Image (cartoon, rainbow, N blue to C red; front, side):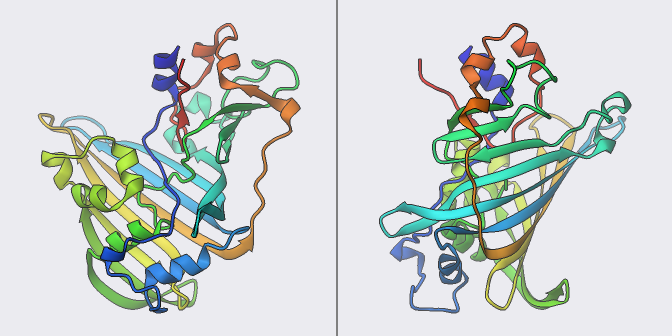
Length: 305
C-alpha cells in the first residue's frame, strides 16, 4: 500500500519556510534596500499574499506531434512563526485547474478544480475534482493526509529568503519596467540546477539527490519583477529537460504573479465531520482505480508502518 500511495500521489515540489539568512551570505540586516531584508519585513504572522501560476509543458519528439499540457493554480499563503526569531509560510490553500485543451474531448465537461488546504501537520484534498462522485462515504468531502511541510507548488521559492538571495546572485541584467501600470525593477538571469540545489532548501527537497552531469548543468532562465517596496510581483521561469540517451525534450515554462501583499489571510481545516483519512480512503473497494493518475500540487508524507 505504501508503494501504491507513493506512485499515485508523490510529486517532488517542496518548501522549507524560514527567512533566516546565514551570516556568510553577505546580507546586512540593517540594509533596508536589500531585497532579502525587504522580504523578511513582509513575512508578518497572520498576514500573507495571494498568487496565481500558469504552467505550460511542451514535449518534442522527432517525427511525432508536439504534446502540450497546461494548468493553472491559484491560491494564498499565510505567514507565521516557524521557530525562534523566524517567520515564513505556515499554511496555504490552492485550486489547480487543467486547461481543457490539454484534456481528451470526453473529459472536458468533467474538469472540476482540484482544491487543497495545506497546514503544518495535514494536507486536505477536496473529493470533488479528485474522486468520482459518490465514491466516499456519505458526508465525507475531504481527504486528509500527513503534511510534508510543503506549502508551495512553485519551482523557485522566492518566498524563501535564502533562495531569493541565491537567485539574485545569478542576475545578468537589471532594468526599469512596468507591470499593470506600476513601476518595477526587473531582474533577469540564469541559474543552473546544480547551483539552485546548493542554495535552495526547497529545490533540494524537490530533487532529492544532487543533480549531476547533464541534469546539474540544466539552465533555468528566470525574470523577477519587484515593486518600489521590493515586493515580488511576478516570476517567470523556463527550462528544457532532456533525458540522456533520448532524442526528445520537454520545455517547461511557468509564470507566477503575486498580489495583495500584507492582507490578512485565514486558512483553517475543513469541519472534522467531513474528513476521511487517506489510509481509510484506500481501504474502500476500487480505490486505486478511482484515484486519478494526476500529480498533486504538493506532496503528502507517507506514514511509517
